[in-house]
Every structure is written in C-alpha cells, then in structure tokens.
Amino acid sequence: MGTKNVEIWHYPRCSKSRKTLALLEERGIEPEVRKYRQDPPDADTLGDVLDKLGMSPRELMRKKEDEYKELGLDDESLSRDELIEAMVDNPILIERPVVIAGDKAALGRPPENVLSLFEEA
Image (cartoon, rainbow, N blue to C red; front, side, top):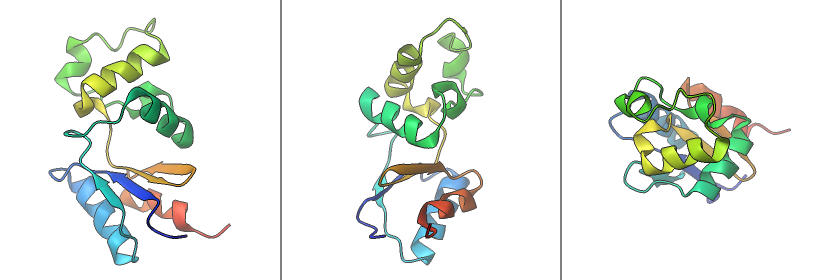
C-alpha cells in the first residue's frame, strides 16, 4: 500500500499519538499529519471516519474532558449528528490518534492497533 493515502489525526503533546506516528515512520509509512485540534475535520469527514472505525461518536469521544460535561454530551437523547457537531466544534473531544488508510481507519490505543491497516489480506 502506498503511504500517500495515509493520514494521522495527531496531537503532539499526547504520548500515544507520538508513539503511533513513530511506529508508522519506523515501518516506512509517512502519513499526512493533521494536527486535528488546530485543523478539525468537518462533520462529513468525521462521520465517514467513524464509519471506517465502526464506532459511534460517543465511542470516539474523550469523556473525561471538561467540555464533555459542560456541553451535556452524556445526554442519551442527543443524535449522532449532534454529537459529531460537538466534536467538530470542540476537537479536544476527539480521541487520538486516528489513522486513516484508504477505506479503513484505526484508533492508536494502543499504538500497535494501527498496524492492522497495513497487513496484507
């Protein structure tokens, strides 16, 4: 697989994010690095990545962030679109790192999770 289609949603201050990026680079994979807190995905992109991850928005949310409580995001009546919008508006809520490779994605928790994206079928 070429590495030009690989992207990592990266937060440099996060050790898991740094380890995941290093793991990719050690294997010759040079992903496009998206510092998602400064350059958050739009709602369509985030929805697409959630589908690739096989996750609901809440599964990709950092529930311990103050914003999660302040915005009342534990309200079970909130729709998928409302949760995605909250994540777009408050990218601190997006769990990291996310690696996207073509039509697949993986969460780097632990960092080795992302290696499955590059295994031959």
